[in-house]
Length: 448
Ligand SMILES: [Zn+2]
Image (cartoon, rainbow, N blue to C red):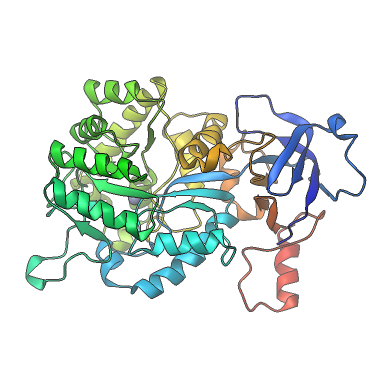
């Protein structure tokens, strides 16, 4: 990677992540880790000749994206049970470091975790922040919090295994407070609480609330008092209502809504975010058969109906001005790491977002979720220089974001982590370690 004190990206077609018009021939002046100026080419005549230029050749340039529903510590496991049973904390951490690199390579310069195995998120976040490992700016989550028999409490009791790597089981308000205090101690930024279940978990289905309101209230009160952002898994209207009464900040899923759930979310729309993670269902239908989830099995679990309901719910949330964010629960075998931008396509094809609305959701709105001092999500003076160059037009065809050969440049905090453009220093973040010089040149050449 290169960290020029100052550099000028010239001749880009600039989409700044807001509702502003695209600048057809523009430049971005990066100084240190921040953007100093964004504008049309004629606004940069005063920049000193000594500032290095990278010629984007008219390519599309946009803010780095934020993956709003991430699980870097999930290792493309082929069954849910494997998450807890099939991998040590040490091995999980190694996979998570590799997943972080993959996510950055895909153009995601920030990510919001929606749950971690062990305390892997914290270790990975710290490694990224200290420059030990490349990856997105990462909001680290603790282990899942839920009551006995809640969604991810799936190991049979007679085996006496517990759920140690994945979940902290807590019943009654004071136990809930205690586990949230332990998450705070572990160094996580957020806590995820399961309020209801999931079609594939017979012992806790959507709509079956695993916590009382008193327990949910205690969770949020404790988390907010300890500076933790509070996330929840809430698929049903009843779970969403419980979440809004308690004051959760981020709602995962929100598949089934009734009038009360929608109205409570609308009232808090300036504060909350929703990540439907619809790629969970899409990935199951597309790839699940080889892992035991045939279409018949999935239909019987209610997932087809759930997708129909979710499309309707997202339409209502969008109309109500609620920020709905791409982020697809990637990290299981049917939602593999590296395919993150597929959820952008879901927003266009399933939810009826325009490509532009989808990109605004993935940049400005999701940037507001991860926050980082208000400095991510748009290309504006004073923001972090988190920048992606695309050899294509995602405003015309959102699927181009899934083609890694077209994601030519990834810059985070003014540092170039990946660049295969003819102009500027070349770095290949996707190259496997141990590649010979010749192999590396071939990879770079084929990407052009
Ligand atoms: Zn998830």
